Figure 1 (cartoon, rainbow, N blue to C red):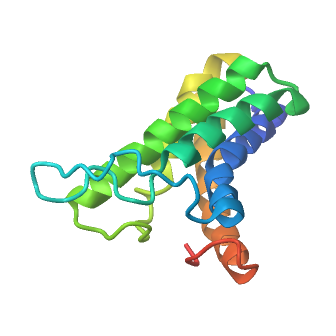
Figure 2 (tube, rainbow, N blue to C red):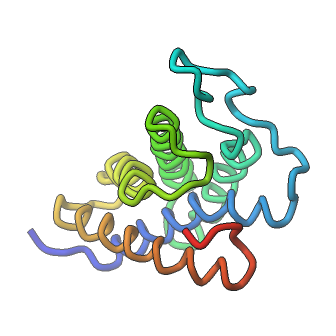
Length: 164
C-alpha cells in the first residue's frame, strides 16, 4: 500500500470546505436564516436533539459550497456532495452524543467533535479518492490536529465565537 499524497490533500480540502462553511456562514449571516435543524425538539432525556447551533442554513451551505468547489480541486461535483453530506451527518451525530452527555451547544469535546465528521466523510469518499486505510488514518489525524490549531487561529481572527 502506497500513500496517496494528492488524494490526502484533496480529502483534507473537502473536509475543510464542508466543516468550515457553516462557521463562515455564521459570521456572514449572524442569526439570519439560522433555523435549528431539530426545530427545538427535545429527546427522551429532556435534552435538545442536536441543539440550536446545528442549523438548516449551515448544512445546506456546507453541501452546496463543497459541491460547487470540488471541481476546483480536481474532483467531480458528486464527490463534493458526498463528502459534505457525510461530514454533516458525522457532525450531527457528534452533537447528538454531546447533548446526551449534557455538553452545552458549541462546547468542546475533543475527539467527539473531530472524529465522526472526518471519518464518515473519508469513508464515503474512499473509492473516489482511492484512499487506503493508512491514508484515511493520516487524514483523520491531520484533520484532528488542524481543526484544534485552526480553531484557535480563527478565534483570534474573530471568525469563531469560541477558541475550539
